[in-house]
Amino acid sequence: MTEKQIFLKSKLTRIVGLMVLIVVLMTGFSSCKKCHVCSVLDEESNAIYSYPEVCGTKKDLEAYEARCVAEYGAFDFTCACGEK
Image 1 (cartoon, helix red, strand yellow):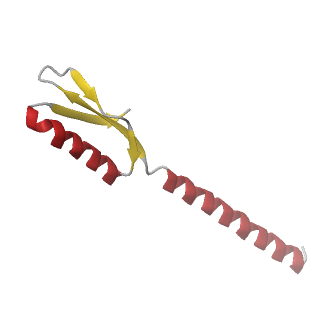
Image 2 (cartoon, rainbow, N blue to C red):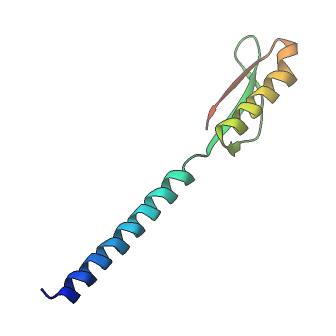
Image 3 (cartoon, rainbow, N blue to C red):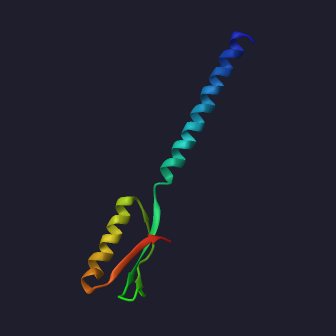
C-alpha cells in the first residue's frame, strides 16, 4: 500500500467510526421518554377513572402521578400509574 492509500483508509475509518458514534448517541437519547397511564381505583380496586396517556421524562411522569394523588387521594381513592 502506498502512503496515500493508507491515509485514505485511515480517514475513511475515522469517518465511519464517527457516524457509528452519532447513531448510537442519537438512539440512546431518544429512548429516554416513556408513556404512562394513571387509573383511579376505589376501595375494591375497581378503576373508576383513567387519565389520558402521558409520554415524557421521569420528572414529567412523577408530576403526572402527583397530580392524580392530589386530585383523588383526599377522597380515599388510590392512584395506580404505570406503563401502558
